[in-house]
Image (cartoon, rainbow over all chains, first blue to last red; front, side, top):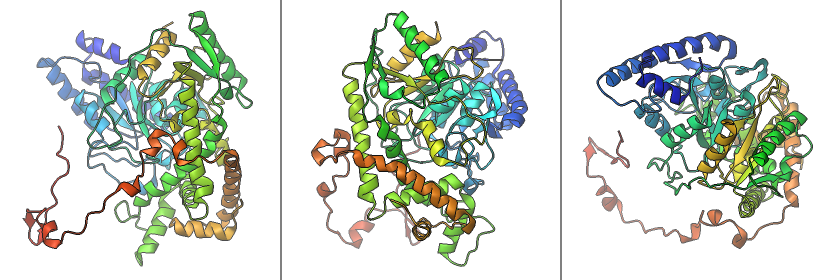
Length: 466
Length: 98
């Protein structure tokens, strides 16, 4: 069982199966594999069946079959579906039931997609392995002794294990692209502002972006086209002038991404992709993005700064008061609820963010990080004067062992080192599986200028369809 | 820059968090490891306002904000014609889309 959006559309049109039959297959598979992999925090069996039944009735009544119709979808647990619990894999929101649909949810519902369940993630999207989930890690479908990546690890594993055809994730510093790399599926981080973030629980608002995880580049494009666009509920969303794909784009290879610390197997696989494009007569140019080395530090200052502000709302007055919490004073309610409700990494980032924004340290850390962000964005602007797309590895290593980095936050942060620069610059980037016989999958990353998603789809499709 | 146990406790207090005493040492060590990594940013030259990216220059033009003078309670009340008991009803900013 391995469907794509195209094969589902064809199957429904030719009446090879009904929406109900397809949904039943995915529910069965999801239930069976979930015990092993811990992909879903909740499976919406009743809703999925009812929605599939209603869809079959509307198709029988003459409704035209379209590409996302009946598509079984996994939603990251920080995206809202009205009436369902969305906890961001945190204990502090364990009982929070969404009171409205995220804009992406509304768009997918309108397209006739079927939500299979809420997918596991690192708490509030902070992490690179899903080990920061309050509900246990999601295991890698290719090797259950390894992590599935993060923070959208549940979403990537759902697609890799055929527990959904499409998943939505959120990417702040690599949270779609890195788990896609660990699980061997396609992951797109769109241009900042391309997709409405209304109904996405905010983590670092200046960087957060929603995107699809799929088996094929073609499916990623279909989902992106369905969810993109200006939304009155998110002022950072834009109806941008999306650019068409260039013919024969020039590919840039930044030397700073191929340095010490890059796993030789990853380097070899990415080189095989460069060779593929070379053999297809694409012009390949070595380029330099000189401020890349500052990206990790800048990100881990900006991100916690925004986290400390965004997560202040979880004060147990408006959300999820724990019965164990004392109600003597407001101060005690805040402190005890946050201490009991948040995990270790979340607490660490809140404190780090409070530190870098505090008087006396703001200039030395936060202001400096914003300047580094500017330098990095300028590097990309200069590079895109000479090349159209940039090709890089997604992460320095393939999926690491469970627990290997859990006690060392800096080692965990390094998993994002090659995805963060594009995030800081707000650029679109796609993570695409390398064709390999290795035991573990691995991806390469393509980065394009703002609003040039079509260049990514076009170039990635040429590789995937070889 | 190294933070001390006292600074960590102050940070936890500002963050409305409590740190279990047995976790303080490990957390201080993590913090100092992370902060020492950030030291590399000091190598970067400061940028003046004119060198900032166009996108960032568009943000936070606080000086351009004109604060209107307070027009009085009655004028404010007129903006909320609908009432429920003694309360004023705030009109919807957005209408629910289908």
